[in-house]
Length: 190
Image 1 (spheres, rainbow, N blue to C red):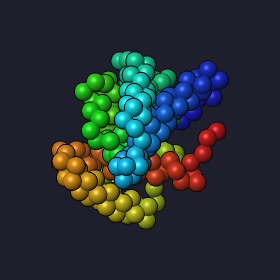
Image 2 (cartoon, one colour):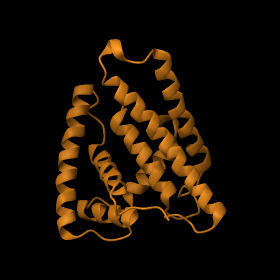
Image 3 (cartoon, helix red, strand yellow):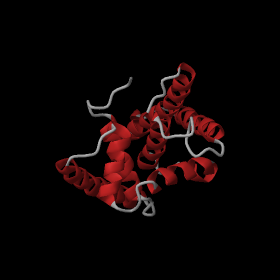
């Protein structure tokens, strides 16, 4: 997931930093929106956070170009960071229509989902392979399916409440499980 060569490693880590920056700004906005209106940050603060997100997306779009993968011609931590940032943005700030403004990133996100096909067990197995470099155990597949069903229902309920019922909850649930896997104590950086 992280190349051995110094320059390649730095480039992959730069992609990771871009993804983290987008995610950090997304978290900041979503957490502040949970506050009662009188306690929320001023409108200018929201504009700055959204500008951070847009600049990060623009850098990813520019650097991705017409490449199939974010960096180096094969799947790496750069693709995980980009995929997570895009999925998290969908889940937490669904009003941000990044697909319209960044079609190359849209294509990347769709390809990452397409690799595993429509079979949920294969999607779970691919998520484990990409994040933990191992196949899931049978009990892990069962737990992951339960997580996906619960998460998908929550995403759909949240989308209905927000008046955006057309969101792709299956895609977002897969992104959420990837985040869970990346946050396990089994995932580590070399």
